[in-house]
Length: 594
Image 1 (tube, one colour):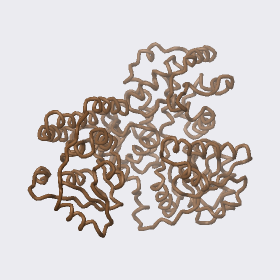
Image 2 (cartoon, helix red, strand yellow):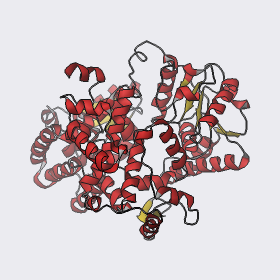
Image 3 (tube, helix red, strand yellow):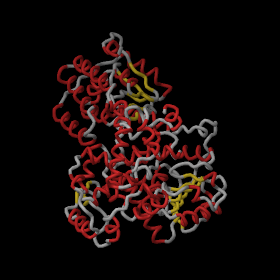
Image 4 (cartoon, helix red, strand yellow):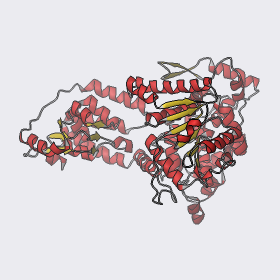
């Protein structure tokens, strides 16, 4: 159909008002001109779903806007608003909605076609290099570049043939299935049985407050003010408050450096922040988030104060993922409005609906407990002699955004002790006690971390002194090198690091902390940088299911026998290893099939 439109004798003009995504944009590009309103948005989202534009987009877009811009738009699934699309030549004119059709008709009367010159070779090479740097495990961006090149070298008909063949092959690929699964799972996170199906409407959250200006609290505050929420930030004294405000300022400056904010917008955003040392201003809050260290008594005191100072409708949130929410709120009469990294049985549906609405606006997610074994197993391997950077490299080459030690370096070792103690109290069988880690935390002479940074902390390189230092600490701790673990290849390291994560995900499903496996997939993708083209646990072809519950169970059992109860498979995983159902099947499904 698009081919017929492109060669039609009668000129055709696309009138775009609103979204022109994917095939809709490809249809408009087969026309001889495109006229849009100011609110139009244009995008090729196909690569986010594991395929490529399949209706002529790879051939027509480069001819319209030039090769460099076309590659960027397709490979990054970049959204263009009308003004930017007009600058590139993708849209020929912008008019008001009232003038759209009359202008399009006028253009159709005196259309003319233009040709563009190509300087393709270097641009294509640069695009391939960038695609491989961004996602070395993904093939479809490179295939997309090949298809575009075919059209340039051999003409549009040859390019269209190659596009059709590539689209069909990619559509049935593992990557496409995973990315489509992630796409729908992300939308499914907003659906909770017995909550979102009650017809409740979210109440208007206009003002927020945060208790604690540390790494987590300042990050949450930054996200809220960037999304235009006025925020009151409370700390215990002026020194901590100033430090928290400085972190927020630094976060905003990163947005300025990346071109996401102007200096004027940065100042305007910062004006939404108010720092305080008491709870007086909390009486105006619709949402409060507690973000202090993992200490039960401290959190109980804070929530008792919040109940006294916050209005009755205010949602009371906590960043904990290790402490039982019932325990945190036991000294209050407000358990129906307390929420955390998960929702517990007393939380009212209305509070959940309100929080979902805020989360949808700020794209928030929490996933700490599920990925606690990620760093735990890595410390286990470190204790037994493995190179830190070998572990990180294996994980990043698998597709993780950062390795476990780079992650620990980023968050700081001061976070680890409090979290570790809390995990030991709540999940004594699921914690590995490191020999080397406590020595690193206690040693203040060297500074926390494994990496050196340059280019304003954007680039990280291994610190050559780190492994010498770790070797010295291992000797002090009398940690023994395990020859078998030293022989592990990258694939085996990834399994040893991630199988305990899958085991913890199974526990979360079994305990009802997560209502469905796909929620954990989305939490892992957005919260921990797990590659979306794999997904952790749900879907017929996702990472855990592709390996199989039986193999995961066998390996965990083997490691438990050799190295202790930290690796012990949970009952949920054991049931699935013994049966025929997938890891993502509900407990009810598993019992029915068994």
